[in-house]
Image 1 (cartoon, rainbow, N blue to C red):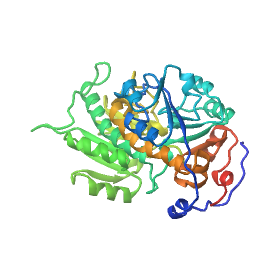
Image 2: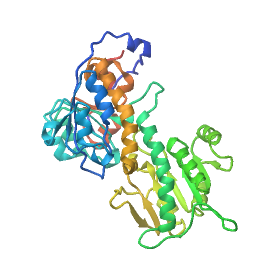
Image 3: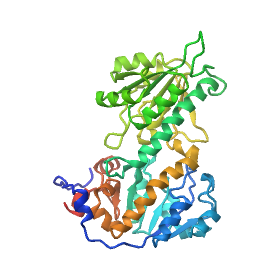
Length: 403
């Protein structure tokens, strides 16, 4: 069992109180390395955002080729004022490392220590060694998907969820018609006169789920949207086509829907860092042959018991004659669009760190930023991570004090 110290309830400061704090703008030294893992095509900052930050007094060093797969070449970043280097080691020496995918073991070894890492966490792909390596380097780490905005929402997760929802419906349509290894239903999502449309079940009435519903309905599919919360279903119903059926998740009812489904899209959000498993292996086993599962929720563990992480290189596998698509970074397939969406969020976020006087000062006063904190100078700040990986952990309220 990990060492743990109890804490009192955090006193949440109002926005007015946070703005009243007397701070001094800081000059930040930011490194953007080239992504090398998991077919990642995105980059956190576009040339426009880089130019904005440099004009505000920050230094940005970019590894050569870092933006190529997103459609942003070195000359565009150089024109924006960034320093371009062919050395990844130089980039990983910067005080702030900003990248999309979590760093690899080799990348962590290049970090000098006592730095700040800004990246996605992608918990399903992490292991104890990852957190231990960052901890040994005394790294402060922010999970981009957990940083909150003024509406107490994850702006990044919303943007990527909108993209993933649209993609899920389109990938489902492709796999339904083309299949895997020559085996497919050969079925269109939309029906024609005399032929019924495909049956699509979307699990989760959040941003990704509603986006998937719109895309699937746009292709003419018959759609059922399910969720555990009636309030989310009510809100989703108001945004969707009146022909979309909504139901509360119940094992018997969901199992019946899956036995008649052509495409099932899992789009549940995480609870305490992990997506609830609502579809058992037995339920998948009873699905029709060559039906399709798209697990958007795989980033946070997945909502199907049969889900396994796949990649853009080999995105699918079959289990119980059901095609599974479980790519954790779906939005990377449209790197240009996704990079602009991420940069719209990350650029202002970095400037906000500076406005509070730097990373440490910002974490002290900005509770929305602190929501994304999972390591502070090498110490885990999330209880579920400490307990799961058997590592020492604390709580941010203890580290920074109640406001």
